[in-house]
Image 1 (cartoon, rainbow, N blue to C red):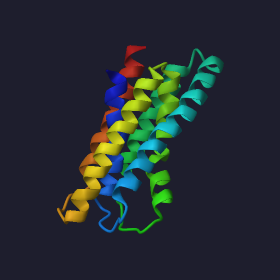
Image 2: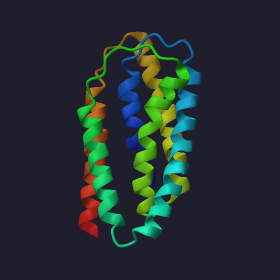
Image 3: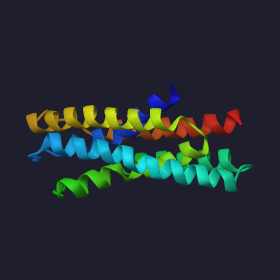
Amino acid sequence: MQEIFSGLIVSLDVVALYLLITDVKSRFLLSMWTAILHMIFPVIGFTLGNWMLQIFMQWSNIVSSILLFFIGLQIILSSKNGHRTLPIGLLAITASLDTFSVSISFGMLNLQKYYFILSAGIWTFILSYIALHIAKAGILFKGTPFKWIAGLSLITISVYTLWDQ
């Protein structure tokens, strides 16, 4: 269950970003690319996290908690997004890079990799596609609350992980 919730959390910053982009022509393609990258980057991150777990067995919970805390903090602090036009591929990569660093932490915690990866991909596709349609329709949403929710959720997971140690 934690993996499914974590997949939802990492997709919220994409929603915050994509709600601000009104002029995307290929919303389905962008959503699909972002979802795929939200599944590829965690595979790399989990692999790296498992490798780090073997090296830093004693320190893995502390290191992963610190990583999650600062990633959550970075998401909150980056809530100032301006309007930018980027190519779809670059936009999808930019929106998906945080899943790499988050998945390193989750890999170090030995979470179920495939549940998280599937959850991140599915949630990201659904929520980004909806966000892009909402933005295209001109409904004004600010992405900041979604970034705050995602950031605070990661910080909460990091504190819980450290506390549960």
